[in-house]
Image 1: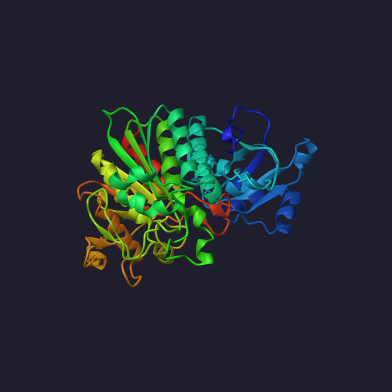
Image 2: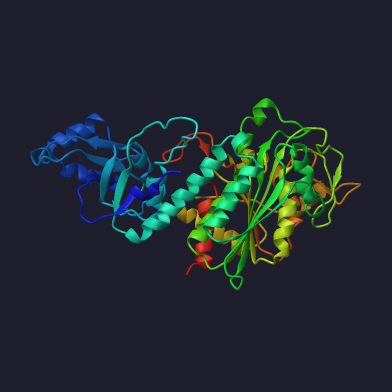
Length: 469
């Protein structure tokens, strides 16, 4: 993991390069105040303070006479309210050293973007650059720790998702969760292998084909004062998804190392909660399996029981995530939490509807939905609420079981998947389901191609607002 401690430091007047922060409204006045040499340089590069554009100014004019080094001029959308990714391009691209903003102040979100942009996944390949940290000197040192914690949690999600399945199987998810528990003095429990068959038959059914090499398991962590409000966080941990006997194509399998992205989000959110000592009683649940193929694999037409007692006819073995989540949700409900947050890389239908940047958010409680959407908008981590359209529940009917796991025809796929999960949550228990991509297909400033946290910061901001001291 990247050490973010050197990326943000309090401004105590130490030597630093200047970053002139400009938006379209302030550019003309700044330009008029510059000497002829600076204006010529700006004109030569056609710099007009477009968002995410920047220009390194050599020591010319008064700076050169005073022996000063280079400075930077950077464009942002609104310099009076810097957003999460406004400084990300600078945090990644600028030469190493210390920098100070002029014309703007960096709040927590902008600090986060500056810091996380300096993270690179380098477990299997040398990083693109070995330059040292770019340190932003900030005038709000009270926000530094919070920004670094967010950067660290985001990098954790990215790294877990980027790691190949051979090195991120159910056993590795268990080991990392146990490390979290030890670090924060949390209770830790695992139900593994054939021990799942009676208590968690759907987790067992999905994972039994990989039993010898990568035994399925339900990972649980509990932390915090039992007297505090109890919340449950559930994350889908399919370490690799072949599709089972309803096999994916080669192209369809190519990114399936990321099918444990929900687990990565849940673990990172749990880490944020415990680090901040949020006054809640946390219950983390990660059903971890590999959806493989062998003689024990569940077949289309098989019927699985569930922890809740509902029977499920398997119509598509590639709709496995909702099965393992159903058992995990049933266990979470038994603890009587006042809220459940659940993350899963669940359906391609959500990506068709909303693309890769927007998680599909399904919520059975309007207040919780509004709080999550508002928090996401504030921190630059948006989601889009989708309907739990009850009329579509008929698409899950089975003639021989309580329901099927995958509706025929492919219509409303992310909605019917959410409706399947909803059957394992009582109507009056607030529950939010993020159908998140956990991946970025095209790089953006501060957001490289690869694993991505989508919905994490929104959830954390909501929890802080509800339960923060």
